[in-house]
Image (cartoon, rainbow, N blue to C red; front, side, top):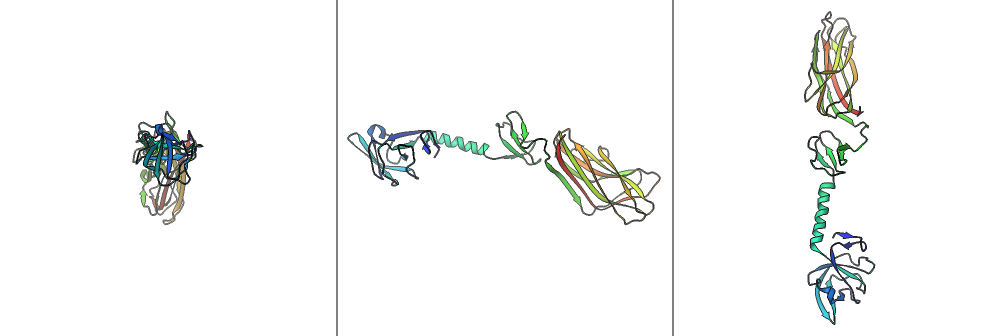
Length: 298
């Protein structure tokens, strides 16, 4: 039952009441006839003492009433823990008020009692101040400030993992004056004003002959794909100092991407050769990985 503390803990809201005019028993309650009208057979009521302390744990049901000399004796079930006394008050909830209160509370639970799941593109259209959401595509928990959606955590703090890819066995070849790829790529949802650290690595080899030099690049594009014509985030020289084949060199690099536009973004690694005088082919062998992390606001 919906209650209020206006007249004491557990007092039902929206009620009609009847104060006791005389001591009763554990199964009867006495009140003046003028107050007894609503207390008819089948009505449910709660019982409190003069200090607004609840006298029972189970609501009572009126079994019958009898009026004698201006006083109505209300017989009820089940029996009370103690006898009713002068000054006790019986409360009958007004059904319309109780149902309205319950409905309001249920609505609050339905709309405000949990963190709603959505995507960054399907946030609630009519949010209330303080509403929390969890974006399934970004992993962000957001709160509506009354004017805009804001991050629950400090906006400058790193948010960590954004994407990861790993290939245990990879094979690619690149001749002179060529660039191939992406040999590895990650698609994630970038947020404007955020910086992302891109860590990648692989192992390289080359055909027999003198030492060879290649380059590896990280490129970025909006959308689900990235190509050799897209924006370069970093170029890294990869020295393959091995005079024979079969001697893979481990390469590990990092670079950063500062997002200026929110939305789906793809970064990828590319392998290239720019030395026209050396025709040896660069071979990508073994593992390859790429990790994208949110490292904070720009």
